[in-house]
Image 1 (cartoon, helix red, strand yellow):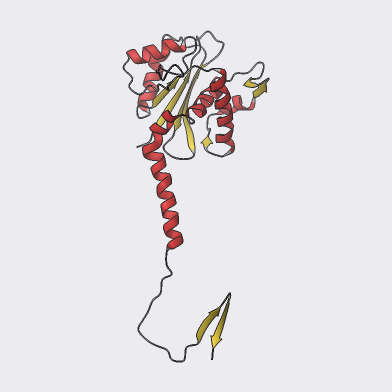
Image 2: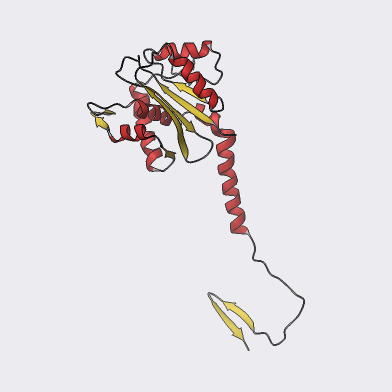
Length: 224
């Protein structure tokens, strides 16, 4: 019954940048990274089959694919494989939709800010050592963030795109029926606990010698 979102970053598979996938469990807070894929040798021509297989194993996970460069080919191939849960966020082009998302300056800025909030607020758990390693070398350069010289940020970018997605109506539609319901129920349970009356057991026996008390303000007085 869990809901998963897979975020896909694509490289050309020539031993340079990595093709990377993060699978995030979004069933409830905190969100949790439960699986990753990380390979800089795999051809982008074969990559769609890997993505399809991995996403299918995780309850037909919703897929957000970066469609920059060869990412557009990945989106098209997944569509050809008839993968149903491809995320198509609305674009600024008069509400039109396209498969995947372009990592524009705006998307990256929002994603980086939201990712920091998720991690510092303990709302996203990262379990993968490669991801954690990349996070330690993901630094500010000018007005943006990127991998430090000699390091990579492909797995981090899957989290950046996921964090960006959490700010959209598309994400709300995916988790609304489950996450908001659970949060609402938690609030209701808390209210009921606060309103729960004290339990009084009456055995029907009156003790005429028992002391009688009366409250005055914050003080309790015994009547004689």
